[in-house]
Image 1 (cartoon, rainbow, N blue to C red):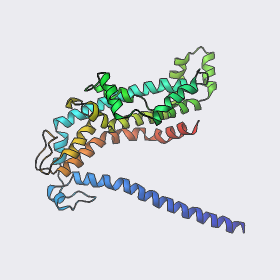
Image 2 (image 1 turned 180 degrees about the vertical axis):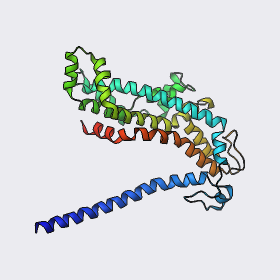
Image 3 (image 1 turned 90 degrees about the vertical axis):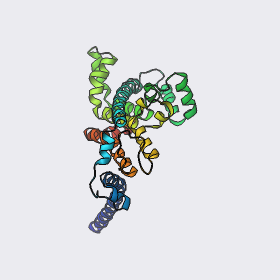
Image 4 (image 1 turned 60 degrees about the horizontal axis):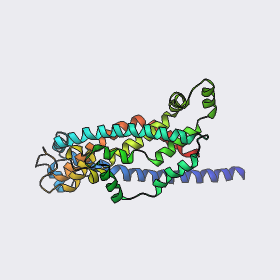
Amino acid sequence: MVSKGKGVRGRAYLGSEIVFNVILTLFVLLCIVPVIHVIALSLSGRNAVLAGTVSLWPKELDLNAYRSVVFDASMQRAMIFSIILTLVYTVLSMICSILLAYPLSRGYLPGRKLFMVLILIPMYFTGGTIPNYLWIKDLHLIDNPWSLVLPILTSTYNIIIMRNFFTSISPSLEESARLDGCNDFQILFRIILPLSTASLATVALFYAVARWNSYADVRYYINNQAYFTLQMKLYQVVFNATDTSVAMLEGGANEVLPDTIRSAAIVFSTVPILIVYPFLQKYFVQGVMIGAVKE
């Protein structure tokens, strides 16, 4: 009877695992298939695109769309500016988040709970688009690249992850360091941060991806095209393309279809994050799980 019960439970577990794997596979396909279609479309020739025969494999291989995008001067400027902006934003955000999360993780900080409540409030309640715009305008940051950095310099969610990770580190390490004469900054930079590689890499990836993908603030605060990010250029290409040409591309070839140009621009804007992600992926799950479990 016992063995029969175990066999039933084993079969039930195996069945549930098969169902879960099937659902997970379908979900992955739903995410991957559109991406493959966009890549195939960007590499296909004009006649195949017009005929609507392109699905998951490029037909009549044609690289003119990528030539139009990659060698376009405005796209190149936007790419360089986006990379610089993302690096500057990520570095400054990490510095501010670390300097905020570390004190909040120490139990001896006076008013720690009050500070945490004040940090959590903007996570649930925001002023809205118009007050934010008026605030940026009063600070004279319209058409200034710093308007894309300072208003979103820290994220409450990322601070919570980092704070919880710092809290999970054994207090005995800090006590031993204090006995050796270390101050708070020495403890932070010599002990806490070297032990927090997974959490730091995860939060840095969150910040970098958020800044790289954002274009709404560029629409609101930036009028000078020299400060347009790559995502803003992509937005213009996607929504302002006509049936005969893509006006947003300075050097684009008119014989390239707008659909092909749009697909090439999407792939072009996605490549930098795809290059960076594999180097941080091994820290990703570990950093999120450790930062989320500790309360």
